[in-house]
Image (cartoon, rainbow, N blue to C red; front, side, top):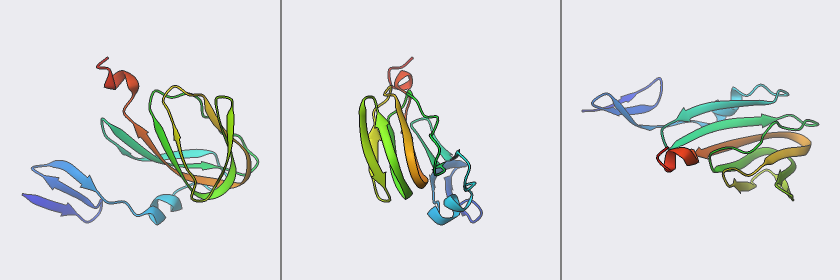
Length: 128
């Protein structure tokens, strides 16, 4: 049997969630503007997704992670440092950061709001 939950936008087959629908506007509206924050809205064994907000004038607290990451800048501008390399990021920039790479946003000129996708942790992929 295939049902859709109006409240969550989830489809279920025999009680298991097999898909979800999210509205970007709703996700972004829950961001605390002016506060460094990350709000996860999806977690599965192989993927997690969050809305990330870095206020103007601040530096984020990011560092190396066990997962590959993909950032889509929804709004704002600043710089991203990965290892010894730096790159300007603006609305529409898409950045991939490989697992275990040190990285951070800095010189944030306008509040950055990003959609962030995290892959499965490396240790999970290696069967640890």
